[in-house]
Image (cartoon, rainbow, N blue to C red):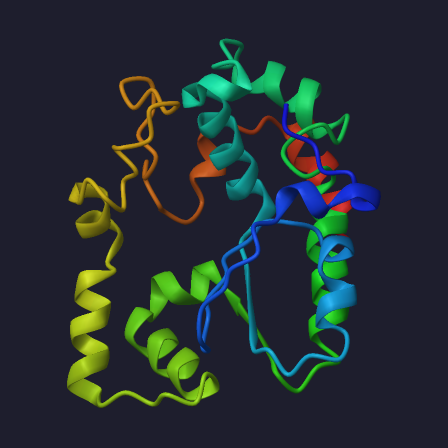
Length: 201
């Protein structure tokens, strides 16, 4: 699996030479960026999601991603192999989220939003993010953006569903799969739930 070595993050970056503002989306741990961001006025939006739903998303991503081996085991196998051992993606999700949280909560130019809140009020979340970025949008514009970025519409769009990515086997699992809140309840057993609750707390 892809792992990130915080001591050698340089290989994970492509220097973007374009005029401001420039937008960067990343899953990298804060160790790879904090030096560059420490004295920067860059605006950061950190998105957090219930880790249980995030782990289910990981599972299906590992099933459909050729570079990650198209995992063929069960959810319970995946949980033991990748979650308990901290071997999924960029390591321990709890530590990854907490490190970014601790970095961002002390910055005036950082905003933390939750996936569940966006699902509940997408238009309101768009308005809040636009205000934070210093580019407020009119009510009608926020409605149009919310309509275009509604999960089911993005799932039907070949671009946002990443259908051009050859390493994704979408016949196993679509890149944009369900996007719902609480799907973890269809997978977790009591032991797995207790483990995540303990780590989260």
